[in-house]
Image (cartoon, rainbow, N blue to C red):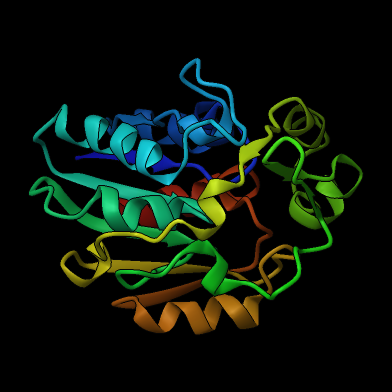
Length: 231
């Protein structure tokens, strides 16, 4: 088995965010990889009004999924669930989806279908540059309140401005309808409230709750490892 981790919005270097759980999985002989998402300014492509969006993110993840035909579990975090819905569709090696504080869109739905009309208070949307990002002063209290101080500081260095295209771009497939799925509700999440997560989770095959904030793979890596091994 291998694990492919698809990170959320407005961050870069998924391997940094995933590293604590990745290390524990390696000890059990399970490799993992975290693809770069072009819409977040990764892969050498600047984010912005003329920059890459959801289709480029989907293509990047599909390349990684197709590079190995061994049994694969995809971990989709937050916005990563939008990407994974299309990227994992029709890939025979994908055996399970683990959605972490995430979304399970139907065909034709976009990220905007899961939020309010106004941007979340912790986001900064800049129409002049065509990007959006997390307000740094709200990062820890909203997303990392249960993480080690080292990770709280490091996370600030791994934020990214993301192309705003992704907010309204619809997905062209719904992999969770084809592949067994588990939803991990983060009960202490202050970014995506647990009540919303439980609503999103109704589309998943099974639901697990963990007493953790928005990034359990940082704050509770052993629990995330054990859940993955159980799949």
